[in-house]
Length: 442
Image 1 (spheres, one colour):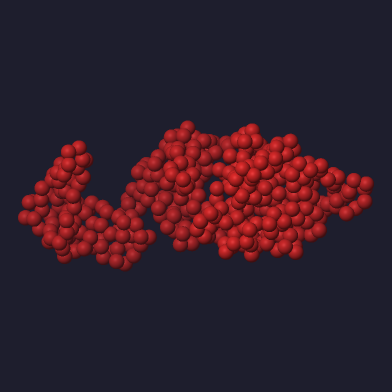
Image 2 (cartoon, one colour):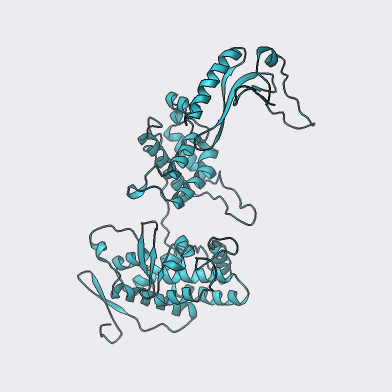
């Protein structure tokens, strides 16, 4: 209700709300002041009346808060207090958040909302002292909404103990926050030890930013023991690669999604991360150098070489108006359904526990089987540099040769062809030169 000037007589006459239908839960009602916008009175089903203010924060969130109990606070005093707070709002201040911060009463949900808003604005620095990437922020928001808020959102930060946080981690690991996939789009919310550990790591990081920027006094997650995730060691054997390749061809004839099938093959030929492959834009391919120039990756801007078999696959993709090699079926984005296609294909092939990361690991393992060093394989995979030596891995002929050799071997296995003569590798002072089957240098 709106359009009335709040006075003692008017508020005294307000009645408790009643249900309009049998069985409908009664909710509180609000009456808003005609003269001071955002100032009102809340009437509960019990008849309890309180003064409230409602406003939009500088970040665009709607906020409503009780500022006093009618009967203990007069209308005149409530109006003055509401006016002070709403004036602060007009100056870009969130008065309720400021008071909660001063009293140490901010909730976990409020700190998470603050973090998302500040990170979006570029005011929080992440890895390498750079603003947090949009992709990272999307993942952080998913963990916040799916796991952190349901378990800890209403708790005051100052009241949290390590046991509360580790208890939330155990609940996530046990699947307490899991939800099934709804509709035809989006994914399911899963639990498990890996999800639990990463979620608690995100929460710890959020609290650290909040401490550093003066939002809270201390990080209640400091010293938390995160679950140790089991190492992901699954790789496809040569016989499994051949079986997967045969199923890729069979399912293509049966009408399986062609973009999904091409993406699966590309992941095996390159060892790219799932979103690196799916979000690959045509403008990033340098065909002459057989390289992809990523403007940004998990490890920053990179140039990544790929084998000729992978280049050919990209060039064979249908040309569309989309900037992506693997475009979405509708809209302007890129294809995202590779996991579901991979699950269907592997189900028909009789292969268990295969994920896009398994394909990346398989590429790296095959390169290792062919005799290439960990340093060279790390360069092909786009791992962050860990020392001075790795900085000297450039896009030279040796690295191109490695990418070509691994991609060709993988293509042979997928297509059921007899493998090419094995290349053995001779290493001289951290450099690698390929030697063919009869011993001449290539």
